[in-house]
Length: 333
Image (cartoon, rainbow, N blue to C red; front, side, top):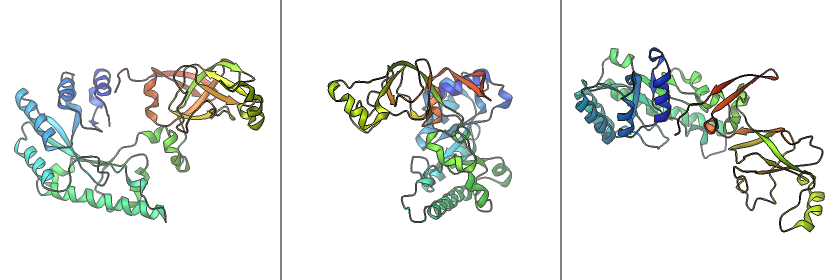
C-alpha cells in the first residue's frame, strides 16, 4: 500500500515490476494518475476511487488513451472519511465499471477501520472496541454481498478486500468466520512509533529513532529576562540547571535518551510542546548529574513512522554497532 505520487514514481522507477502489486492507500487527483501512467509497468497499480466523479475522470482518460486500468473502490465502513456508502452511488459505480470493462477493471474494495480503537465510551472499552470491529465486518459484508449481484464466483475470488491497520490487525484472527476481509494493511506496526506504543504489549519493539547531537552545553543556565531568578529556579527544579542547545531540533517525537532530559517549560510559553523547538538550536534541560556533553547524541521516539521522511538516510544499528545505511525515498509528499 502506497500513499503518494512521488513514492509511487520511485517504486516504478527502481523496483522489479514482477514484484509489484500496489494498492493506493488514498485516492489521487486525476492529473497525478496521468503523470504516473508515463512510467513503465504503471498498470501494476490498483487505483483507489472514492467517488463517481473521480471514477468518471479516470474512465475518460482511459477511453482517450485506449488503455485499461485497475480500480479499487474505497468504501465507508464507519470511519466516515469519504468513500462509497452502501447505497445508490456504490451500485452506480459498479455498473459504470461493468459497462466499461474494456477500459476499467474492478480489482476489489478498501475499507479502512481506523476508527475502531477510538470508541468514545470507556466503560469496558475493550468490549466496545470489539463491538465496533464486528460492526465494521457487517458493513463490509454488505458491500461484498452487493458485488455478488454483479460478479460471478470466479471474478469475486480474484478480488482484494482490504482493511485493517496496525491498531486492529490482531483482531482479525478472532473473527475469521465473519470477516469478508482477505487483505490486511500493516505499516506503522513494523516500526512501533510513539503513537503505537500500545503495540509493545503485543510483542512489537520500537525500531525507529531520531537523533541529534548536542551543539552547546550551558552548565549554569540563565533565563532571559529573569537572570536573578535563575538560581532559585534551579534549586526548585534541579533538572533545569543544565541547558543543552541542540543542532537543529523540533523533531516530531518524544525524548527517550539519555534519561533525565526534559523540555524547559520556562522557555516554552504554553503547553503545546513546540515553542522554541525550532529547527535551530532548540533547548533541552537536565541536572548536572547527567553525563551528557557536546557532540553526544540525544534520541527521540518519533510520533509517527513517517518521521523518517525528514531525512535522506536511515542508520542501521544492531548489537552495539552501526551495520549500514538505508536510503529513504527521494520524493516529497
